Amino acid sequence: MLLVLSEEHKEHLNFLNKVDMAVVGEFGRITLEFLRRGISPKVYEGAARKLSVPPEVVRRGVEGLLYLMTQSSKHMLSEVDFVDSLLSLEFDDELNRSLLQMYQQHHSEIRSILSLAPSTLPAYYNLEWRLDVQLASRSLRQYVAPTLVTRLHLTHGGGSGTEQRGLVLYVDLATLLHLISILEGALASSKSTHARRILRNIK
Image (cartoon, rainbow, N blue to C red; front, side, top):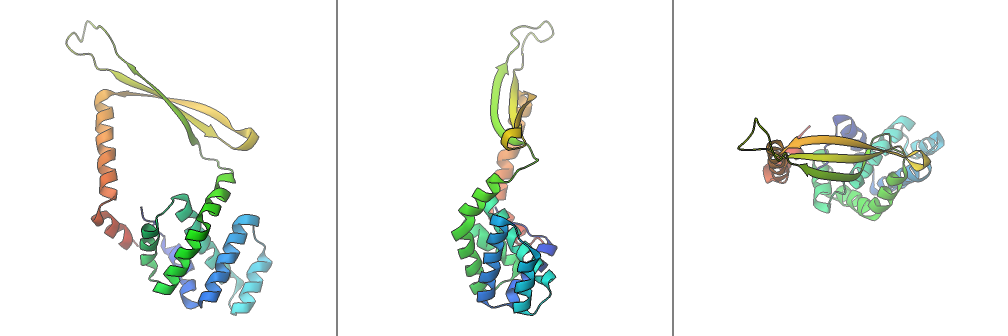
């Protein structure tokens, strides 16, 4: 998959194209420190003085780089997908290589840090299913359609406050087959060259 960046994120990251590679490396270091320990305004102010730019410019640049690295790590982008995701930024080859190296070196650590962060969204835990078949019916003597019953277990919260909930879903066979067909078609389309070209040019 490709990472689609908003115009706001592109604008924040565009600052990296105006500085030398040593500064890009410093931005990468600040970004990782942000993830590991949080950050204080003094860090932005110190970097801003060195670069002779407002602290807000540094903050936006770090946050843009943070978004790029965390989202790429979250979705486990391959080397090709990561580089293709950068094409919309129109960076030069040296900057692209530097960002790719940064991603390859630290994506495992970033994923580890993200896994420890509390989330308010439900997360998949387990799935149980059974097939219900009606053996006889006065109204349907020739054909009785089976029903797939699933219980989707989700976890909410984190740490000691984690709780599990089950969501029961009933799906008839025709709907299930149609759903599988649609999802397989969508998955195949997302991997096509045409889809990759469209995603690369989305503004």
